[in-house]
Length: 288
Length: 271
Ligand SMILES: Nc1ncnc2c1ncn2[C@@H]1O[C@H](COP(=O)(O)OP(=O)(O)OP(=O)(O)O)[C@@H](O)[C@H]1O
Ligand SMILES: [Mg+2]
Image (tube, rainbow over all chains, first blue to last red):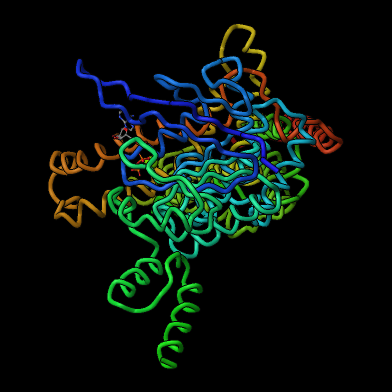
């Protein structure tokens, strides 16, 4: 069954305003994307390829220069729908320090629902649920500045969750984190997606994170150059390299081995797959 | 050093005092501070001092923490007491040597002042120890909400206050980082005259300002994403409701006031 579309970019271009006479080049060029309910999408692209711009457009923080963006069928350029759009699509930014408003964890998570004018008892319920979902319930009375980066980022995610959005866009949420913090945030995201059915759009520079997604979109200089299942996307080595990216470690290693004559199948993405295929190839070679 | 300040910190808890309504707590604290200044003799002062000590016991906040908060002002207390002892010439002379004259009035006033300052610190720090900054600002906002009628944007001011409180630790951390970065590049922050040191601070404050602007910009986006638009449609998770606790606190502080007035009236004044 085809799932309903949540966010639709239809031929969207965007240009930042320039400080002087000469206009800036387009930051996004003729973007077409459909993001479906409950999908887990990873967006990859080099620095300045337009990923963050995309996130801000989906959330009605920026308006397209041309083309239309629909969130659940609502046109983002309609200012009267701003509230509802932001209740449907939430954005978590890269630096958790700059998105936490309150001085106590639970009060920060309550900030969004409070702005929506929700009943106090309902806010309480949502805040507790959101904090439990990201595994930060025990820290609800803590001060945000005393938390680790990964914990802060999970609080920021809970803050969006408490608004009960259908989709969460995370703009490089793990960029400032160590491997442990990254794992914590990834686990929280996977849980949102798999257990609560929230669509997750993950903007990232880590190929390993993208491999875990249902779908990968690769951007290059304001355009979408690849869009599909991870396995299909990462089989286009040339386009990936031209977009200034690298394949996931295991895929890269498999590719190099294959090029130097080792008998390995294509489409290897994770370390586990690599080990399996490599074992098979080595034992097969011995039998020959 | 800056990180050691405990005044203004919040220690979560579930005590009677923690659970007072922030508005009630603000009013009672203010009343208690006024009462401290109304005390005229040792009896009334002792009463309010015992009140402050019991309040701390009641809040279940360890005395160690409270005394640590006092550390910053030990010097002030000591200095005030010393001044009183040497310069106050009221009462009988206890000790005289050349120009130095110590009177019993001076000693009494010194003790009186010291106890008064300590009580002041106890009571005012207890307010912040037991109330989260956000709750406190909420309380202030509610208490001042009649001012909205004369077009003072109390809720916006309260939001500003919350953000200021929220960013103090972040900025302290950042100053630390920038200072170390500049030191690593050979900046000399600790020697030289006043002018030289002031100049050395420029490379600290410029990045701080630039970063703060960037932060403000990002925070504004994040707040907008979470549907903040400065209007008064906001609700609050924490409902403020006066309970029997608050009424008890009001009655108690009222009785204290009566007791202090009576003690002042029937017993002699020290100051
Ligand atoms: N506020 C702005 N004003 C002008 N130009 C901007 C602004 N923000 C971004 N740009 C430009 O728009 C383009 C896309 O930027 P964007 O931030 O969307 O990239 P990105 O893919 O998120 O990069 P990164 O991986 O570094 O986060 C870049 O060329 C950038 O220089
Ligand atoms: Mg970006």
